[in-house]
Amino acid sequence: MNFKTENIDNNVIFTILDNILEGKSASELKSRILVVAQPDINALIIDISNISAIDSSGLGALLLAHRQLKDFNIPVILIGIQSFVKNLLNITRIEEIFQYFDTVEAAVSNIKK
Image 1 (cartoon, one colour):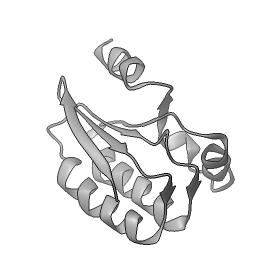
Image 2 (cartoon, helix red, strand yellow):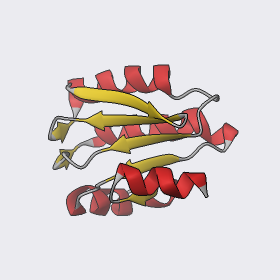
Image 3 (cartoon, helix red, strand yellow):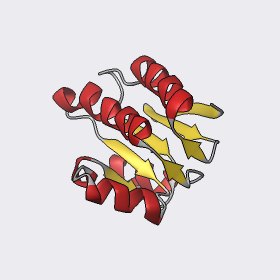
């Protein structure tokens, strides 16, 4: 899986550079989430704007991020979600556990408020 991480004002931004999140790449994402989703961050921002296809393993990786941080009231924010992925989150009834923004800048600005 190709990705990059950065930290802006104690917000971890995890950008997925691949266009499919499934199987092996989802397993790699889960491993990386366990490292970055710690209680000392303000938010975990996952940029999935490149993702055009996702399977149940990919959804599981996003759910892992939520489970890691929910007890600390730290939001998991999805950036640039495409309609296919949004519909899948809606069908599986998990869309309301995430926050959504079009850009990382908008998400970081909203967290500061």
